[in-house]
Structure formats: C-alpha cells, structure tokens
Length: 184
Image (cartoon, rainbow, N blue to C red; front, top):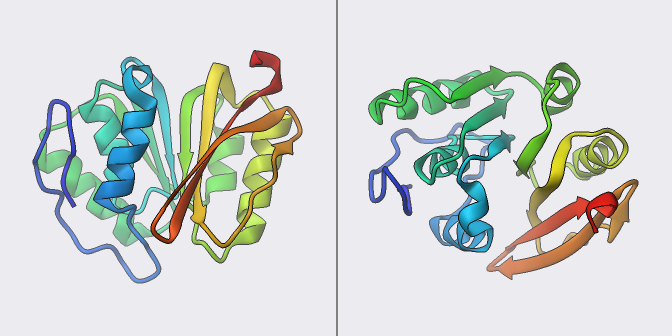
C-alpha cells in the first residue's frame, strides 16, 4: 500500500493487515479521492473500520484538518500508529480502538467526510451505520457518508435523513455516497 497523492505522495505504508482485514485497493483509494477532490482539504474525516489506516492517512496527506481512525482490532490499530509514526505525523488525528457503533455514540463530532469500510459480510453493520447517520446529526452541513461494500450487495437508496447520491463500482468493490436530505 502506498500514499497516492498529497504531502506524503508515493510513501509506502508498513505492516500486513491482520486476518479478516481487507485493505481498500490503491486503485479504489485513488478513485475515491479523485471524486472527493478539494473537499478533503480542511475536512474532519472519519476512517471507520480503518484497518491499516490507508484511507485516513491519505486524507491527512491531502490536507484533512483532523482524522478519526476507528478500528476494533488491536493489531490493526498498532499498524495505524506505526504508519503515522513512520510518516512523522504527530497531530491532527485520533486512533480509537473500539467498535464503530460505540465510537459513533462516544464521539460528539460532525464529520465532513465519513468513510466506512466494514467487512463485506457484515450486512447488519451496514444497516446500523446507515441508521445511525440517517437519524443523528453525524454529518456536517454538506457532509458525505461513503460506504465501501461488495458490488454484489445493494445498499438502500435512502435511510432516515440520508439519500444515496452516487455509486461507483471498481472490480469486486463498490462505493456508495450518501448525503443528508436537508442539504439537497
């Protein structure tokens, strides 16, 4: 895994993700950040089910103001910390070793961009995330919730105050982009 663009462009990330952690491919990460473009600059960003933290570190590289890495695997959190240290990133982030849903209840933050990549087989977690973001003010005005999922799994067009505004498919993976109906 490598950083695609920004301050840390072309730097390699260390560590082999633990069993059960499926990193987002470099190609899909590049597509995601091409879509997000300048909106990453100055954003409060959530990397949920962070794995090795490549998405959140890419956001930092591209100028995100603050990144929350949420991951329940101790080994994966250690890899995130090691990668941040290797890049000499000292501030502008918080690594939270806990279940995503617990973190969403603990954090009193509105995210400009929330990227969540649960294990593809955890359909219950996709539903719970959509319910949480669709019913509570987790997103800032004009914020985006992005869910990575298997292209074989269709996510709903709307959930509570959220509506799907875009879908992208690349290989076996897909990205679903949601925004608040209040921002439409």
